[in-house]
Image (cartoon, rainbow, N blue to C red):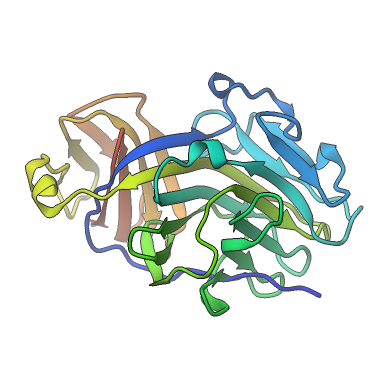
Length: 303
């Protein structure tokens, strides 16, 4: 039976700052990955009878760096299966943020789930997303069951994020930087493993830019002390200027529905960045600027 999960509708209307201890997995050579079977690399394990060749590190479709993870489907299993990684060694805080870029290939075929497990051996759920195979509806697990969120479109990249806070017993879900849920953390509160699940009914998915942040949210005073990222002119017809004294890691542009339009890899460039947005049609967009230890999200208007 097909069950899976829903999440996300949004417009972004503000700026968010987080101070974090960041661990990133984007399947790059610098992280110890090689192109080929992901199973067996850096602690990733294929399960459920899935052929190891279904889960591949590929030099294509990246949202960060030059590589991504591509899960194909050949209909061999047609039951729940996937690939998981024990991330216990990466968790050093009671408050943890896990995000990743996700792209599913189609509807009327495979169902999809992304799970965060309380116990890597028993696979009790602390949080999870599901995508319905018929509608693309994203749902998310709360302390009382699944709640439906936005409808996602196949073959588009989405950034999905879950924030698990033992400090105040809360669970939050985000899509492309916009919060879609905040509520109580359930019985399971630990973060020990991440699992990318599907049921191999003919269509696969892609993943990139997994980020595990051990969070310490900046106080109001600390935020005020930081120099804000400056974005101008806004509205703009052609050129968008971005200034900050901090080093820029990447700049991403999303449309009003949250679909990724373009991403610019900055490789540590700071201050005075100019982006040509003349290719965009007139309307509202969302820009997300990733610095080394925080993110800045703001709406822009293309004239």
